[in-house]
Image (cartoon, rainbow, N blue to C red; front, side, top):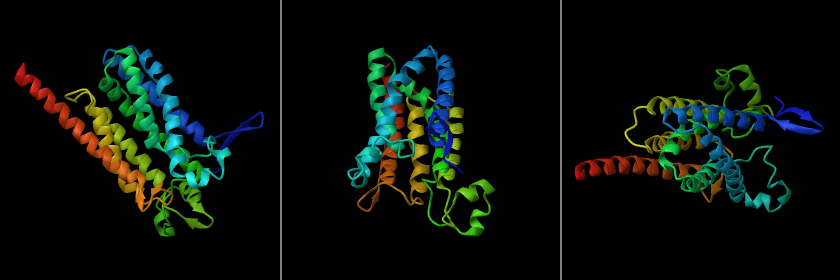
Amino acid sequence: MNPIAFSIFGIDIMWYGILISLGIVLGAAIAMVEAKRVGYDSDIISDMLLWTLPAAILGARLYYVLFEWSYFKQHPGEILAIRNGGLAIHGGIIGAFVVGYFFVKVKKLSFFKLADIAAPSLILGQAIGRWGNFMNREAHGGVASEQFISYFPKFIQEQMNIGGVFYHPTFLYESVWNFVVFIALFSFRKHKKNDGELIGLYLILYSIGRFFIEGLRTDSLMLGPLRIAQVVSLLLIALGLILILFLRWFKAKNKEQG
């Protein structure tokens, strides 16, 4: 499949960008509906996106460039060339959360409530965005047997045939996992006991899948012998667990004192 969707005035429009944009639009639409459900004006989501989206894109790219610096220091002109791929979701999450924190402080809103609104939309955007990796033939795993790859649809078989060798479609594994997490978060959102539990659950569930799938990939960002995404995933699982337990402990303590 051609990674270029079409061209306008000589400028190639990549499927990678289109699919990421689609994920953002659908995620924003869902977040707006959810914002109304919990009593916020839906405009708060568009305002938040104006702050967090540029930060997420910048963070995702800088994170990727940082751990691939040995290449980019030799090719500085490619540092901002994101149309061909090279956005690390963990960097995007960090960038969005940091700027999002300042956004809620300025607007005097609840950080955890807004984070919970955003959580299902975030994982849905990730699920869709992984298909951009598919179009670029990146984020795949190691060599797969012809018998194994035959279980997948023909278009996936053809795209994962690179130079006559079949590779594991790890982009697909993660996309499917992320869709499952989206369903879980969307179903749980009305049953949470505290604001902040949904974003905590997002950190746990997404990171569990990412940890195992990352072990199959051949293009992991590395720090010495360690796969950075696996290390970060473990940290985020711990953070999510601590957050949920702390919120429930804090609520129980307040009830005792009240």
